[in-house]
Image 1: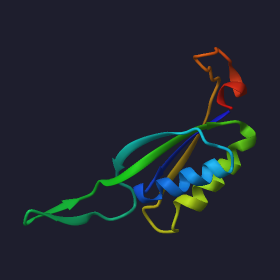
Image 2: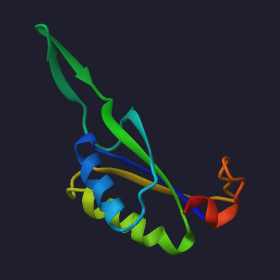
Image 3: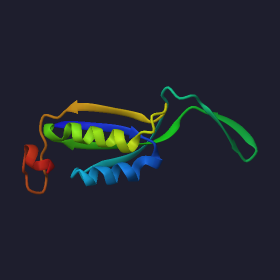
Image 4: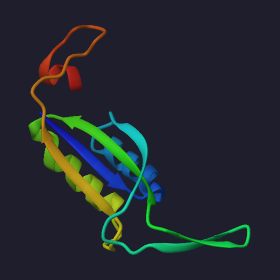
Length: 113
C-alpha cells in the first residue's frame, strides 16, 4: 500500500476529486494548506495597504491506495491537477505498512477498498 500526498491549487480540487472518483479511487482526505515553493511572492493590496506575501493557499489531498492503483491515482492527480506551470504543486509517495478499518477491524488492502 502507498500513501499519496498531493499539494494542489484550490481551484483544481473539484476536477481532481471527480477524476479520482471516475477511476474508482473515491476515498481521500482534504486539508487546507499554505506554503511556498519555486513560485515568486506576490503583492496583495488590502484596505489600501500593500503586502508582499510568499505563502500561497493550497489544498493537500491524501489518498491511501493499493500498489496496483498507485500509478492510476498519480496519473489522475497529474492530469486533473496540473496546468504545467510553476506553482501547480507536488506529489509525495510513502510506503504504508498496514491499514485497519476501525468499524470492522479489517486489515490490509481490504481496509482501503
